[in-house]
Image (cartoon, helix red, strand yellow):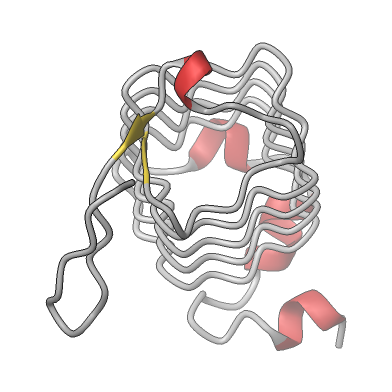
Length: 147
């Protein structure tokens, strides 16, 4: 059993092969829910994940080059060292996401929401790329304002 498969309990059997084969780019349902999915190193090049629920997903080292993640929920997702080059993240929810080491060449971030807990690549200015800093909302309901 591979390390990826052993981490994928929230997702059905066969998903590892599905994502590693690149079939995802053609077959993911609109608004798919992959909450807490373990997709470390997955090949999602060109995948249509518009409005997908990927909150809490582990996408470390995944290849999401040219993927459509417009409006996707990526809150608390781990995307460290993923390839997001030429990816559409317009209006995506990135609060608390780990984007350290991510390739963001020509990535569209207009209207994407992030908060103080979002971790960006070193020397990357999300606001200069159109992302919007929003208030943090921890699970206890308290609100932390940006600043």
